[in-house]
Image 1 (cartoon, rainbow, N blue to C red):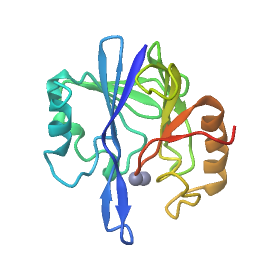
Image 2 (tube, protein in one colour):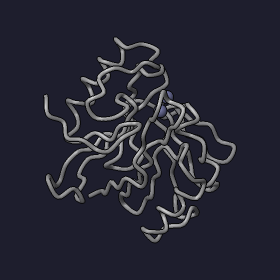
Image 3 (spheres, rainbow, N blue to C red):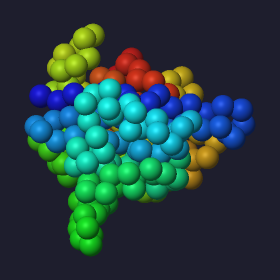
Image 4 (cartoon, helix red, strand yellow):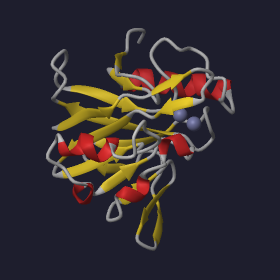
Length: 190
Ligand SMILES: [Zn+2]
Ligand SMILES: [Zn+2]
C-alpha cells in the first residue's frame, strides 16, 4: 500500500521564462520519497509543503529525479541524508551503484527508463496507491513525458519519436499520470 501526494503543482508560463517543477511525495513501507525537488516560486516552498505533512527534510530518505535538467533537480541538496535515484543509478554518500530500468526502490515503487525528452529520462511507477478516492488501489506514473495534461508536443524534447514510444509504455502501465509541470490526470486512451 502506497500514497502519492503532490506537494507543489508545476507550471510553465510565458515562453518558458517562468517555470516550476511538479514536486511529489511518495510514501511506501516506511519510506518517504521526494520526486523532482526542482525550481520553485520560493526557496522555502518544498520544506513548507513537507511540514504540512509533518515531515522535515531529514525525514526524506530517497530522492528520485525524472531527468537531469535543473528545473527538476535544483533543491536536491536540501535532503543531505537521502539516497538519490535517476534513470540508471543510485547515489548515496560516496557510493555510485547500478539500478535503472525495472529497479524496485520499494515493493510498490519501480523505475522505468522512458527516454525521449532526454535520453536519460525515467518514470517512477507506483502501484497499490490507496489515497486517490476515484480509484483505489491504482497505479500512478510520475514522469516528464508530458509538461501537463493535453500538451501533446514537447518543444524541448531530444527525440519526439522516442518520447511517443515511452508514452505508450507509461499509458499501458498507469491509471494516473503526474507530468513534469502540471497536475495529475487520468489515463483515458488505453
Ligand atoms: Zn527537462
Ligand atoms: Zn521540466
